[in-house]
Image (cartoon, rainbow, N blue to C red; front, side):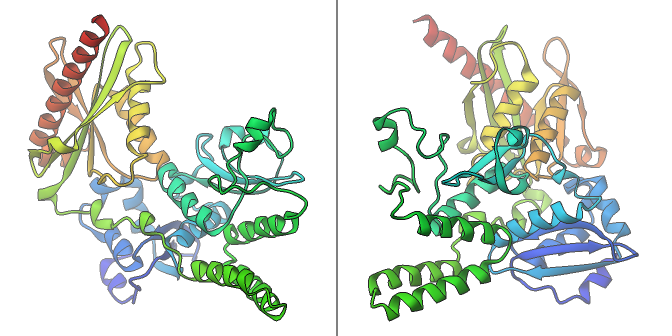
Length: 406
């Protein structure tokens, strides 16, 4: 598909899901967007290969048409995208492979169904009556669930209802952020109706949920249960006007002018696996942004394993959707570190190129691994970011060692 062909399309400036179609109208790729107009246009940038990947560039070349479905919110676009990828399994949606680390949403087959988030590798440990996912972006999915919690009250504790070991544990159950309710025979019908509505919502049937709520509200009004009817009315309004600002990620955060490209560099420091720490440094527009530097105490690695420590750092960093996304990620090391970072980014649906700075025995850079065209443009800035990361990590590690010796 060409940029000229795209210009004939009247893409809306609305959230939704887009489909790149092949010569036989087969679906090649499915994606979600805050703005369909801006997002689809970004696939026709001259540096698509560097900003996304060679695979995505190949997909656009093979595509003959693009279609879309508008949704009422970004949250619904996220859910629709996941359902469609699972149904159609497009060839180029490699990030939506059934990776065992991805999040899934299940509704358990129990007397009091729970709504749980489980990793792919743990799905077989649960008796699920409904299953949605996988959701590759863990950070985005966590934000989405916060919104869903405001729309529906559901039970999601580790133990099924009735299996709490003590009265204290029972009293501390988190039922919709500890709102003080606990499932009982008196509210069973209401709770099961809520579970049904959650299932319909994740099936993309919000309209059916609203219709059922409207019927319920009118019946309450006829029975002069006006306070209850008002509560249902507010729920209908919330569904019709979903507040999902936290999910809105402007595409310009990834596709910026190259003069203001943001590079995040990561480094790990330790002494034989002891007192292991990691850092993130930032260079933007060729200048350091020290206010964006971050330090991490490694929690999951206790031996000398830099790639594993790097994975932990990136997972924790990506748990902060409020931090601007980089256009380049630079790691200290070689192929192992580069591959570890790329895998974490892919698991979060991020097509951000990763470069690795290879050092000699004196820790001086001898070469940089990554796309040649990208290195040509940003070589000096990458080395600056890497040098800052090394300096910052060493200082942080020494500080921890000093404190441990006091």
